[in-house]
Amino acid sequence: MQVGIIDLERLSEIPKRHWAAHEFCFYIHDLIAHLTRVAEEIGAGELRIQLRDEADLEALRTSEDPVEFLIATGRTEEERRLMVNHVCRALFPDMLNFIHGGLIALEKRKFTMALSLFRKPFKEGLPILALMSADEGEFFQKLKSDPRRYFDGQEFNAPAKKEIIAAAIDICDGMEFAQPDALFSILFDYDNDGGLAGLFDKATHLFTRRSKNATEDYNINFIFKNPRDNDIYDSCYRQIAYVLLFVHLLQIELLSRMGFPKANYLDHLTRVSVGGFEAIFGNGPSRMVKFFNQEFREFMECPLCGEQIRLRKSTAAKFFLTEMLVCSRCGHEHQLPVSWIFTRATKEEE
Ligand SMILES: [Zn+2]
Image (cartoon, rainbow, N blue to C red; front, side):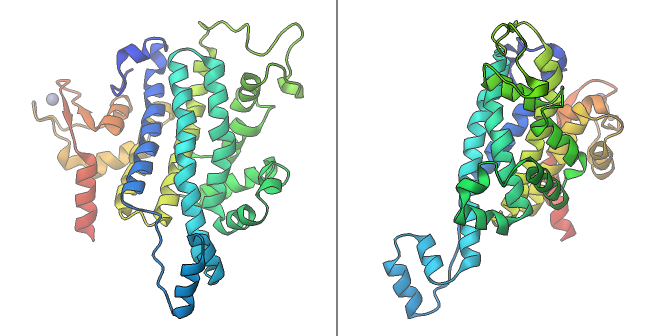
């Protein structure tokens, strides 16, 4: 199944059964990039500080940078806000570079390259986003006082990351699809044969020696791998999509705290991204399909034959990712501007 957001030419090396999965991963990448850019354009994350007195004015004059001013005048809360915002604005573009490179490498069957590119944003960037979402104060304290020791893995180790991922899932909207144990196991458990942790390690190092992930005798990790094998595609797409969706929802949470002005727009993005994931990777009925069938029923009529359209799992991915509705009777496709309708609907509710 092709969703239709990536040219066929680029999909040609990927087995057809994984096209929708690949497109979904790119779709989430693009959403994260889009939100990062919009947040920058509208100045989300910028702080306004009211100067209280002459002393403030003097501190502002003599401080070398805004952070120094905030520290000098005892504005710890603002200092924390500024630093968290600052990290968010810089960390997402860094993560996106690697994710983009990894996805492009998958299109070219460069598996080791793809896996080693995903490693940094997934294993290092993601826990930081989770920590910022779950416990902003702790993140601020550690980054300010002792980032080297804390973040190099001694303190912020695997069990701590597991806890933080679970706490972030509890806090963020739309996380019903996510299981802390599953996410942790995918990224950090070398005993999980089907997970990404072992693959990341082997893709990054020629020799590995962890018990369940050791290089076999007479072998060097991945260098003899046949590029025509499809096993990486078969085992990884769902996990990559799962992790990317998690990152996207963390971004939505963090942006909402940075004063992103449109909460309902973020709500809408949560629904379509989770809906797309459920349609492509989910087992059983999708909550989002049900939600859209209920909420948008009056708009879901085929303009050509008049059929009342109901989303099905087979047509839902295309709908969530491209806003195109497929008529089950005549096959005609038409656009339903969901984000627009959604914004209107929320406005009327208010
Ligand atoms: Zn029709």
